[in-house]
Image 1 (cartoon, rainbow, N blue to C red):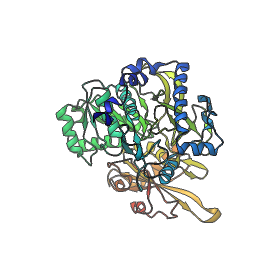
Image 2 (cartoon, helix red, strand yellow; image 1 turned 90 degrees about the vertical axis):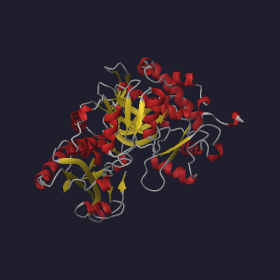
Image 3 (cartoon, helix red, strand yellow; image 1 turned 120 degrees about the horizontal axis):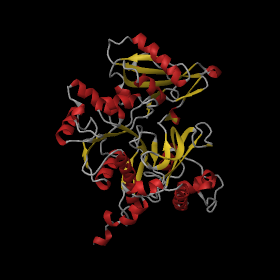
Image 4 (cartoon, rainbow, N blue to C red; image 1 turned 120 degrees about the vertical axis):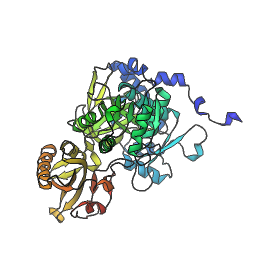
Length: 490
């Protein structure tokens, strides 16, 4: 009987949905230009709805009662700091306590079949990755977030956009596909990564089919450029209008400039997460990343103490999803270090808070002689040196014993060819890293391609920049063989 099947396109009042979460171009004339008071009212209403829902979910009820909260104690957005933060470690505990999906979801398998659901996971590298369920609202809002980004970066109906992430349990490629197909009228080309479709073949497809937009990581954009140069393929012969990418801690823009020169097209930086979606995106002004504030409330907290910080301070990002009920995410500490600025009107016409360049992972911090060092902060010095390939691996370990024990870090960097003077490159990078990090680190030079096995450069999932030997107590050995001791941190 047809009534027993929860048909996807009958599961939501889509006209009301589009009014609540306007896709492009309507976002730019509605929620993207709200006054501060109107936006605050919208955020508060959605926040209180999510809090009310969360009280019925064991994960939240247990955590909130443990700090003395009761229903009714949070009655405005100003009370958000009364709610404790949580992080991905807490989600792993929730899954262990109520496998396989965790007690942070509003229901388990017994609730399946009542609504359309999709299961996606984090990019975990040890054990089972974190599973997250998506109902149609969660799924399509994430797609609208992405569509807003593409539109702000120049995408228009009829564009042909190549997606170099693989449609898998990770949801980045699905998010891009749904944004382009459902909410922009673009034609998605789902090539997947270089593992699925070789880089040479990807270039052939782009040339033959007139691809004019790309969805890809910054590292893979560089890899495509290298393959193009090696095969005498002219990247400028493509019809590329825009490159939607994720540049990481490209603080001074060296990576962006190199990619834009190679491709002959603008590269736009973005920031998103598995659970919350595309939180922030650049527009064509390339002046900070706009936050989709009708779907997310953002805060920053001190990396060491967890204390809330004023806007403009460098801290760990805490995000509250304003649209997700399956499941809610309220004060989720993403442990990504960055800066959030106050709302202002941009040259593109949007009026939002903005996000800075991504500065590093709080849970990958290394304390060197009293200075907090984030491995990803090494990217700036390394990518601007033309003698290096751009691939690097930081190895953190303990030196000494007892009270004299201290944290140390070696930075392994690939040189482009054996013709590059290793001693000169090492000395120059050690000086540049000292300037950027505020503390001296040792640099070891590796050969081109030597680190890829450990950094996962060019493969599925996030590129790894830290090999953490501190928990194992192991010591690094010379050369890339260090990476065979212990496990890398994603």
